[in-house]
Image 1 (cartoon, helix red, strand yellow):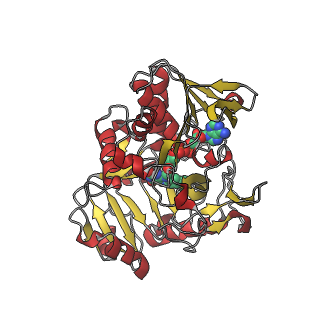
Image 2: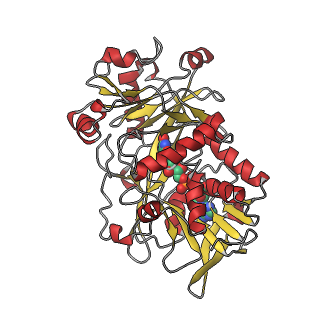
Length: 435
Ligand code: FAD
């Protein structure tokens, strides 16, 4: 049965999924929602606090019943019809490509992009250069091939959408408690159930339903039975001039699955963000009970090797920018499930606890709709197909291979441990902690 609208709901984490959940529950009329986070929105450690994220709407024609098609359909609907989110969506098109035999095999044999009618196949440097205004792509594109989808894919102004979801939730009556008072140190467990959370200041927050949406920090609060692997990726910004921003406006997203990606520069700060592509970094430590766990930490620098990869990517695409200093960089944490499907379910024992985790590297573009799946889980009416895919599934993480690249490529083509990184960038503080 659907809970009454005044029953208390506690959401742990005001990041991408926490804000989406608060929004959807508030829109459904719930009146007693509290969200806890150690930082004011947008949290500097939220994966969603970023100038842009890719939205790839996928080809719905190929397998309309697949989970990814269903998710894409809901996300797209939000970006194109929900007035809260439409201002942040840029339907600029999307190029996905590779440059080694293995990388190209992934695009052509596994994803058949070369035969997908939604994608134009690009197979020469000249064809790549022609996808953007003259003077942008001046590189050699050595060995690059890939598909160009001109419409129905692009990017979103991530931080803008995150803050919009937060503000609208607050307007609808959701209470956000941030800072030390919102820093959850443990779940409150009584009589075999989760009845709330305890924050750093010692306060107990009790609720009828508790939703854990703490992203990569979730395993710090609950034994996830190895279903989450906190993994970090790397991003860097470079300053652009006003003239460059004008020239680089409305560019399609360029994503090489083996070396990196970029979108147009951010209007506000006039910065271009570049991510180098690689399977990811973990921060392995041995916990008190002898288990291996990857523990997130915040850092506004990236490993020197990531800087070199960013510059290598620029050299192949936009060599005119390859030597420019970084104005900002950070590591950014997300949490991968073994199959990279989301984990949205009631806990099997702690029945008042709902898990909303496992963004698995593609959780931002669903900010428009993922909260609805989480609200459906609270109300016990999640679509059975999604319920099965998103279920609590520790059986999939038994003897988990923590070194699995999980379908990702680039850099060393292996997972890296931060413990082995000796050299970091030395970017001067910009006086801001957000990306
Ligand atoms: P987050 O947004 O990280 O939120 C977690 C929240 O929990 C934070 O606000 C944090 O402050 C809070 N928190 C932490 N500890 C506590 C505590 N103890 N108590 C209370 N609150 C706590 N996805 C896409 O769709 N497209 C992309 O192009 C894309 N690119 C990405 C690039 C990078 C570099 C990275 C790292 C991720 C990318 N993703 C992308 C993935 C996407 O950003 C994430 O899947 C998504 O943002 C996860 O949302 P979340 O709410 O689970 O976590």
